[in-house]
Structures are given as C-alpha cells and as structure tokens.
Length: 102
Image 1 (cartoon, rainbow, N blue to C red):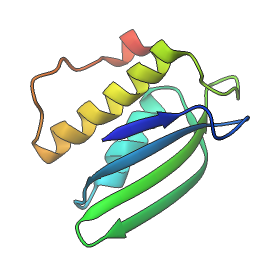
Image 2: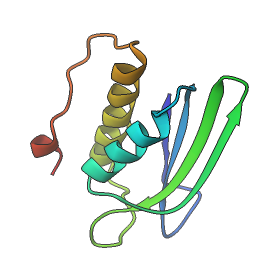
Image 3: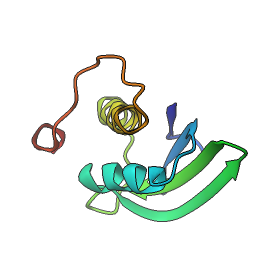
C-alpha cells in the first residue's frame, strides 16, 4: 500500500510505503521514484519481521512539493504497480509508462 501525504510537510511530499519484504524491494521502490522524476531528500527505512514501512520525503524536478491530486495519484499508482509486479501480486491494473508520467 502506498499513501501520499501532502499535509504534514510544507517543503516535501511524503510517500509512505507498506508492503511484504523481499530482497531488492527497496531498489524497486526507489527506481519507481526516480522514474517519476522525483528526488528523495530524506528516507526512513524500517522492517518488522516480513513487513516494510518506508517513508520518503520527495520533491519534483524543480525542487518543489508535489501537491497536485492527479500527480499524487499517478505517483501512488505507479509505485504500487511496481511493487505488485515485483512481488507477483498484481491485480490487473494497467502499468503506467514513463513517457506518460512526464
């Protein structure tokens, strides 16, 4: 599950990620963030047993906070799709391509 928080910070968009842990998952998440054109300014990475709770403080390519609801939805859906593809839990939603994201 991916949640986008635009209320807590004045400078950053916060991406909360909750998922089953697997080796390589952090790469999948951060690659999706990179492909979305976002920069990570801070991250809190944690694992409990077989679950991850990762928090990323991000900005867009102009160092601005992403607060557009449509863009936030694309971010959430893209990261979720990448995680589901990697974990093999995809439910059939269409994959958003990089060209469509920018």
